Length: 236
Length: 256
Image 1 (cartoon, chains in turn purple, brown):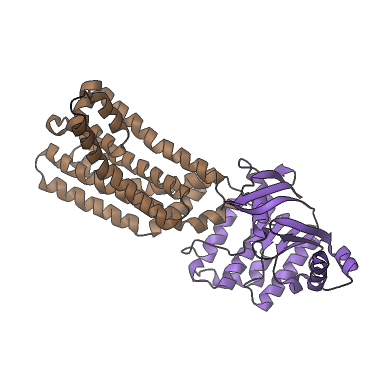
Image 2 (cartoon, each protein chain N blue to C red):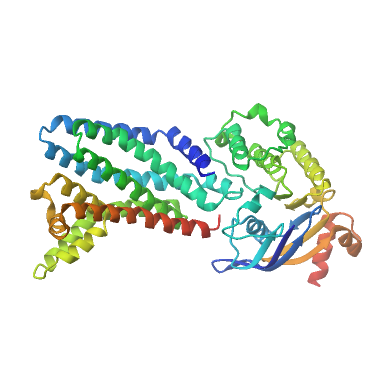
């Protein structure tokens, strides 16, 4: 579904992505992990065409990502790390605008109901708490039944209950054969979701492994411990 | 798709009270000028001087700030299946439509009411051109600089340059090189300033020979009235198309 080949992106002198190649397939749930500023978000943004790579190419569903190609984005639902919305629009306005733009009759509004958003629909985006804004982002990402879900720190601002609801939704969509790409700092909550792990550092992919392989190699069941043990052995 | 996004941009601008205030301001100015001045040409000239300052100032500052404040809206849309060009042009048309409407209601209609002839029409056209040009320049500024404060500062300096410093510069050159024939240079110089172009265009129309100014007089001698106006209009078109086109190129390459 997503293929990146030799992506390099520099911001001034900083190399945000350094010759990154990666393949992601339908039905996988991939966690991209790594310290702050390692290029996770930049990688996701190059897939979305929000950031243009200096070198290399990205294919999404066999379509090349470039300036003149925008149609491929209909396959993607994107939940940004910090969703920023026009502050004078109401929740309902934002959702209706997206429906208007995406023109997709196959709507999936389970998440909106689960988060009880209809009750808040007349609130202005500018007055929402960080968590509620996150909920709107999540609802928009899932609403149009995209084949690819790109979730940047999806549970960062959510309360535990909403976070569980979102995880259940991610799992359900993943089970339908959709590709889910998640970045997160909180490793413990990814345990029961993820099928593959990509670990990045300083713009490079350090490893890309199936979670089973990772568990077998390290003898650890918990994702956080498995990764810690791999990183420790790499240091030696 | 463009129409849909323009609709949202327009809705947003109209909810913002600034454009309404601008419309009322223009309306008050035009009514007071038309009612005080009994002499037609004098009335138009007083109005012209106000238009040439206020319209560019409002358009460039309001549009620059508006683009910076729409960063959330832009961010939201670029991750959706929409062409970036469509987003950018929608912002342009939204701004241009609302500011043009404000001008038409505030000055265009009163002008046509008091001067239902070519002079009134010219006031309308000149103001609309100025609106399109300065919104276009604002988009170029806001597209090129990520820093809002810097962008607004550049917008203010651009306005000061076109509205005030440019004339001082031209006078300075005239004075320094008064021993040489400068007609050709003056024509080229007037092409380089949309405000000068508008002034010449309007003055050619109302035939105020005495106050047409140096560049205006040269223009008239060089091209005659009809051709002069045509050339002015072509230049004004270039003045809003080129910055707009450049700003689209920049926006398409920009990392969001």
